[in-house]
Length: 296
Image 1 (cartoon, rainbow, N blue to C red):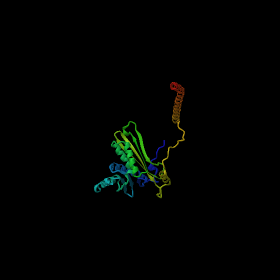
Image 2: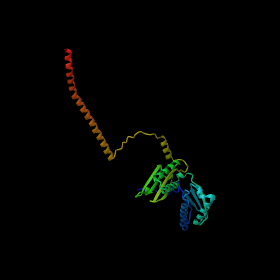
Image 3: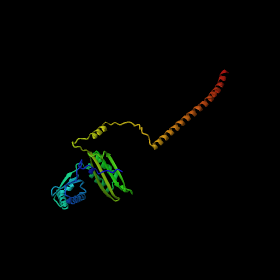
Image 4: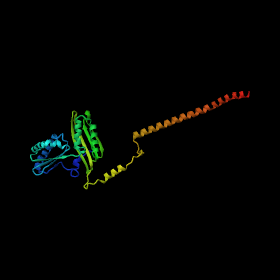
């Protein structure tokens, strides 16, 4: 079976960039990486209700700059900036260096893969049907301007005994096109039946160095505009074994029906031919007494 590569790692340095942008010597690399992981776990737990899509960590000289991309910046900043000051002090304690926090607002949360995955996970934890949650997220994303979206949910869906995976897709989601801007994210929903996994792919279009649309995309759009509804296609392909059996059975039934109709029409014709002389003799017998009565 073919397995799907991680869309973000596949496009790094092509159309995507790293979420941790810093360099370190070999002796310090492990410590700084562990600090990054602790910071991300802390922000995920602390800002669970703030709709955080992405966290960018940069390390200038003896400093740290953290950029939080969120759809609800007011929840992070708080009243008068009190919440962000407390958050800043906690992050400085974790990282051990002065920390600067920047808040960036996500203009279209409907097409952000991480926000979509978190939203579906929260709905599943509230016992909402997974199909309804997935289809609603797909409709909102396509309405907001996404060119394609795919959503997959796996686990004991609806509390069934055997875990399974179900997915829905609308539009195009190219997985092996490097210039395609595919946003990918995962999330988890903790339910009474166990853990459910959510995966989301959002295709936002192609990215070229000069900012122009690729030729293939333009030709597809023109083809969609000029395409007209066609009539029924005469399928010239050879049917499979079951198709041939059904076709032969249908032809045999039609032949037997036509033969039965022919036999019935022939029987009617023979009956009419037999009845014709009897009717003639009866007419002659009736006409003879009338002629004798006229002669008298």
